[in-house]
Image (cartoon, rainbow, N blue to C red; front, side, top):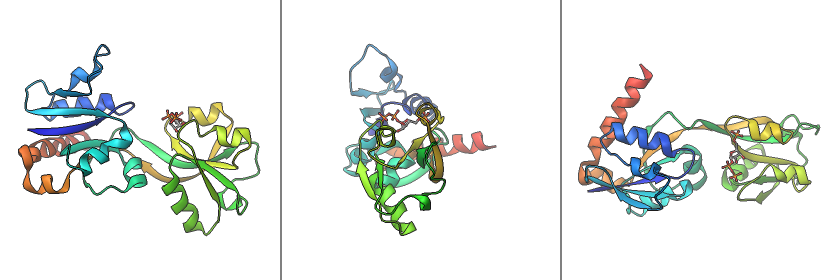
Length: 215
Ligand code: PRP
């Protein structure tokens, strides 16, 4: 029996769609009437855990789930010890530096030394500004990061942009993209090597599906 960690939120629907193609049916998680966080798949071959997206790699790293689906952004930020197996080609977004449109900043290097940058992605933001050799203070937030510059707490933000609507509606513009992100299939490294519960079969089916989508 394999256990799969599925991300709540944006990525859930496509995660369930793809796992179904690979033979694992967790559609019961889409039933709005359920509050169950652990369910067997329809065939009883596997178990699904419904967790916060940021926690998917935690369950996989500790081996409570052998497989997981999570955004590349989370992997870049947390650097968990998991095997990165397949780019699932959905959930596209990017991590960008954004500033108020009304400001004079048009490149990250325009930001003042020792200025402030608000972010949920503190590690990615710190690494990026370190690579520019620009000393800034990273202000950690856990949501509604756009309010950082709006309230005057920070000069800029480093945040996820998907449709760009949140930036636009809050008078912010992107001035740099740090990286692009899509959903990834990850595995517990030892379980992957030992092919626990024949998990390689699910991996191969997802790889084949991605090749089919690409062609
Ligand atoms: C994310 C991100 C942006 C928004 C971008 O926030 O932090 O705020 O989505 O999406 P868009 O480009 O399509 O507008 P999320 O919805 O996760 O909420 P949060 O700010 O409370 O974390």
